[in-house]
Length: 322
Image (cartoon, rainbow, N blue to C red):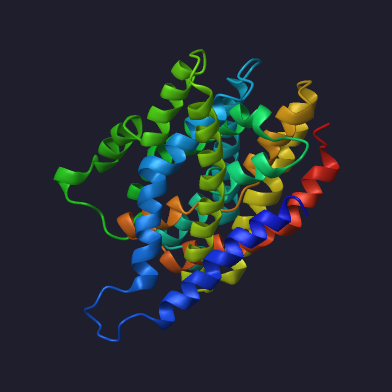
């Protein structure tokens, strides 16, 4: 209840707010729709200011000692395993149902998870984890998922997109990859490392910490707003396979692999949970940018988000963090 209560309340509030905003949307088709503008503006605030400042606030209390470099290594191993599993599944099924855009959306759903907007709150709210091991979740997301989404993910999307870009834009993914280095989360990551050893006034340090927790709840509200906008549930069979790869095979492989390497306790559980997060919302961005199968991407995000409540107890039981 300590975990599901805040998550359910935040996402439920976002869904309710989205439905309420739809009722007050102007009828004129050219008018700005509130239920579209509010999540857009909230998302921009969280992306550029909220989440970066919350990372700095949580990093001041996180334990950054130990083998944190292992987190991005595990993240990349999981991403590549998801890509491999998706390609093997595509090859063993009739090719008629696999046009290139569908292949792209399927592989991205199997590879990339929502390790930020959902992964951070889950790790922070679990009583056996919390702020102390937040560094593992941060390293997994910032140096793993983020780079994977707009690096390898963008490359894959550009290769399988329904509309090939003109020759002058063939290397558009390089521009996206360079933009990762300017991402505010990456910048906050470096700033947090630099400020960790600096003594701040008590009021400022406490204020950053309280602000960080408020951002956690706002992130959940944004998730609810976006889930409320999901309207397509096509390709449910393909989505089920992609979600099974992402939320069952990958975390199980990570758990077994880390156990064999002698990694246990809270760090192991953090990386398993991050590997088993729902399909990333960045997949929708890539699907729009590269003309992939939007219906499949939307279905995967919706199905995986609902499945999280069922898979979390499984990993907490199989790989306890204490």
